[in-house]
Image 1 (cartoon, rainbow, N blue to C red):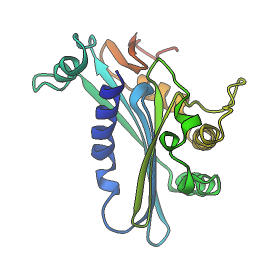
Image 2 (cartoon, rainbow, N blue to C red; image 1 turned 30 degrees about the horizontal axis):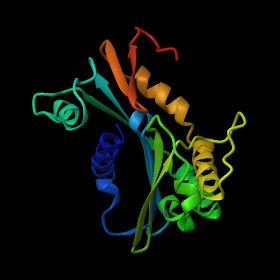
Image 3 (cartoon, rainbow, N blue to C red; image 1 turned 45 degrees about the vertical axis):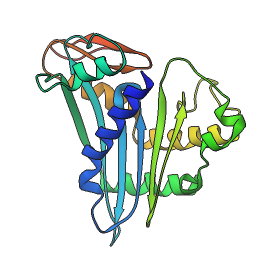
Image 4 (tube, rainbow, N blue to C red; image 1 turned 45 degrees about the horizontal axis):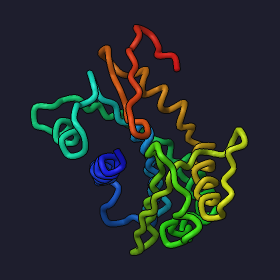
Length: 214
């Protein structure tokens, strides 16, 4: 599932962020979660102009059969119309506050987990993770962390690199509540049976007439 998640997030990142990567960008932070293929894209342009989006990806019907490349082909085949992308704009003032807090928390200097033996030795099985895309000036970096979730309920990371990543995600989630936005996106869907990516599997649900209850 992990290669599939990486490929899908890579394509989604460029589709969503395409309008945010033209000339004039001072900095850009993007946080992508493999769970539900959620992403937060935040940009600052010259003249203190801020813009941001929250995006989640869903699929209609049943998950494609097969494994690995076969499953990817079944999902990306020309005859497939399963994917449903829901995007919401984030108010500029909220974007400004979040970017300021993320900068203060050290997002521009976060270390690569894969370059640290203690960090990369921490293994997980279900395939969920968080990717940070960081652009400051001409510098662009992308870092992935397995199984990072916002702080709460005693889930504090012990490794200092993973803890910083967790704190960054917690900061973003404080202003842009991922659970609430995901629930709101679900409530906007029209149709019946849907699913979204979750770890090495899928979460299925049926749309109700009014609201979908988690």
